[in-house]
Image 1 (cartoon, rainbow over the protein chains, first blue to last red):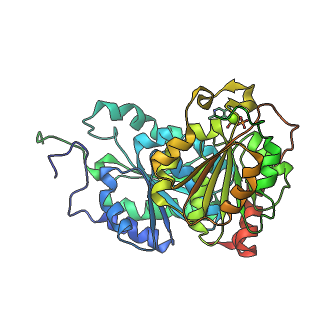
Image 2 (image 1 turned 120 degrees about the vertical axis):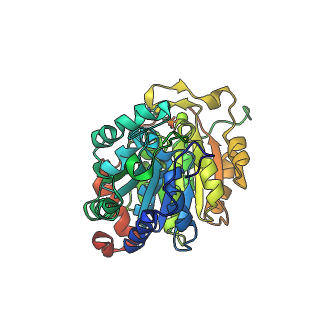
Length: 183
Length: 200
Ligand SMILES: Cc1ncc(C[n+]2csc(CCOP(=O)(O)OP(=O)(O)O)c2C)c(N)n1
Ligand SMILES: [Mg+2]
């Protein structure tokens, strides 16, 4: 594990980010909007290396909600990648995919969830699922590597087949929590 | 600001920008901008917003990236643009050749009672867009500049950003359809054909 960065990333051996990438390809996702999270670093690298994917780094996560509604208007399928704190930035903008029946799959790496080190991550991390659901988003969770593909696949299908915002929450137990050598 | 020029009427500006629009896809920010594009003629390739304040330019970006062979115009208010200024950075970095954003700047939040916005106090949206890296940034004050702006929107090779200074005051409401699913479906059908409703 990387002990020089405060943010956590999965072990180099964990290959579930590659399986998420495979799932995005299987669903023909071409727009990837994101504000980076360490837990998404490997997936982001895979998307950046794919000339068929347009990776758009946002200044705030709500931009991605609006962007993917626009992408859908033009027939493009997209996904929004962010950490749980970014969900708070999206709240009002989630009105758009609800009002306009636009698919909006989100893949959210959880913080403040399981063994968190940073106190600032706890308030939004604790509220993430409730906030999404309050805004009409269908939420599914993955807490083990074996959950990841079925949960992400279901999240994408629910969005694209039933025209609504959906979210896969990737639990901190899956991603790993920063321990600063105290483990 | 050129105070000696009579302020432009927003409905005239929008009618002028949408003249002979051809294939142009139009997104309008919530409130008066949405009423303006509707007054110019409601149609399937209009996407008037009823909410999502701060999101209009980003909807335009997603659409422009998805439809690189179509031109996309976002028309929105100064208050709406101010709520999502980061979008100017994101758009500049992506640099879609087919996207134009026009801000109708009355220096007020007209829809909510005419309170002053930051542009009333000297905030310069053109300078902000230029600082973000958008190459073609224009401040428009005169009626004679609307025709050239309309032509530029149909000939961009990089993102275009324009602020059109307009008169304050409200026009009679000309409301677009309010049902969001309908607006989406009619727009997608116009762009993608009937296959839009069967996309997997
Ligand atoms: C998030 C959010 N905050 C506030 C409002 C209320 N609101 C609706 S329209 C509007 C003013 C928009 O002003 P501007 O974009 O300048 O449009 P115009 O002056 O052309 O009416 C405001 C504040 C809202 N709809 N959503
Ligand atoms: Mg205004």
